[in-house]
Length: 255
Length: 326
Image (cartoon, rainbow over the protein chains, first blue to last red):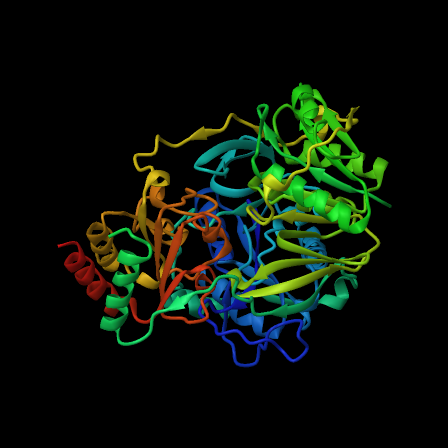
């Protein structure tokens, strides 16, 4: 199976975010970046499918130059090669515009399967996989917890709400969005990191794939305002513990 | 283009409860924009559901009936709704932000050349300008999102953002819409939904829940939280990553993919407060947040906030609780 995994680079999880002077995005200069965690699960699933059924895993990422470090990591973990769609101003694009870039790259590869995480930790729209499926004309399923190859297609376990699941079968080529926790993530080995340096990383300027307009835009980003009056309990850890127990006893009345 | 179309969700003849919240939102937006509001539901043999919608204050109800819509599929729903939207040309299409909507609405918007604004918490309407407010970075930031096309515009509304109680009754004509569907258009073959196993732990009836998130760092630290839960006479629960790691069983997960709880008190330990978690616990009567990051979104919901090192605070807190109960 030829599998493309669409991955995204996002600010590290514990980043302290500050609003950029434009007011429409965050300040990126002093941040560190990492793979979007749900996409790490998608990559792992692709690697496991390859180990089971053979084939090739291609990491695909649209993002600025800095995204190359995340792509190298994917190669170190075991992806066979990678495609980097270089777009410095990725934050100004909407899901549809980014998916159009990814779809253009996917079409030239004609994969059997496209995987991606169920959502990104930055924008969190949770749509890229589904939009991609429509753009390349492939069937899809979302929030997948298990993938089985069948004769002529796939049987996948979808997570529904409230502890329910459902199996769905579909022909290939197909697109799946992978739920976090579907597998156990591997670390890159030293050998993997060494090998990654020799693997193909093809950079394509986004402009070569056609300009895309946006259908929606971020007009403003800002810190949320507190809707609730939070009583912050100050002092040493001991004092905080004593104060909280008082609140639980006399205000919440659960003690 | 005019009118707001609200797409409601049903499974096997039962409504998804978020449908009503979204319909109430649609009514409010319709009033603010001076536009008629339409509702639609898809399926087979949905006459009774459509009739129920006929009792709401709406301009019209579109009942999308087809044998191929009996079970949900992304392909079937997308094709049917695209046909209804092309025929009626609404300016805005609203969905409840359910798992099912996440599975097809982005595809539908794409087919019509649009981008869905998903997981919207609030909508601001000034004149004809619609601003969709949604969270970014797992709730750390908010964003105002605006459409830059003529439409139709697509948005899905987060659970609990609008209140079903605000839904206005009235009367609306029900019109059946028969989409042109062919079995070959539907590539997904769904099997019946199932549950892994009966839940051994029902957290929904607990008065006291102590819930643990990524801040706990390692499985070996979980007993710190268990001891506090025990001292309080409550149950331990967790955010998704903890269960994904196998540190606590999946049945103790709170959030959109786990249980939804409303205890007397919910103590969130090392939980940042991502949307997916918050939807499962924001109904708690009192929320306590313990987190090292003073900017964690969980503090926006908390009644009581403790900023500090949970490894230092938890043992002291457990000790104080035991003393208070002694």
